[in-house]
Image (cartoon, rainbow, N blue to C red; front, side, top):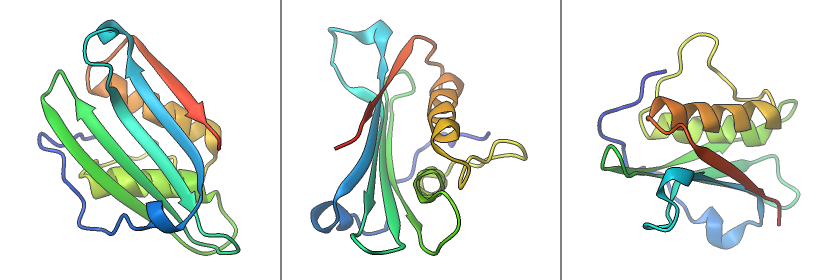
Length: 136
């Protein structure tokens, strides 16, 4: 996995946050920084339009150690695969992440997306983390 030195801020529209229901969210917290600034390192939210085959993920990263901030939007459409994991991977790519062979988790499922979020934090240098899942 290649993590960019400067995280991109997406040019894609985030309007889905106002129009579509959120179906899933994750916050990955740095446990070594508890009580300091209280911010999540990685904040993931997935939205899905009612009755649609389209899903969007919006991800924010606040890398306290690397002093980096960025956000990305992932978009999926169609049928026959796991939309949430594909949208999450697309949002990371939108920020400039490059996934090597064997690191792709899009379309694979919930366990793979959770493992990938944890692995991205480890690659950024965070060892003591907690991944919290929200399902509204």
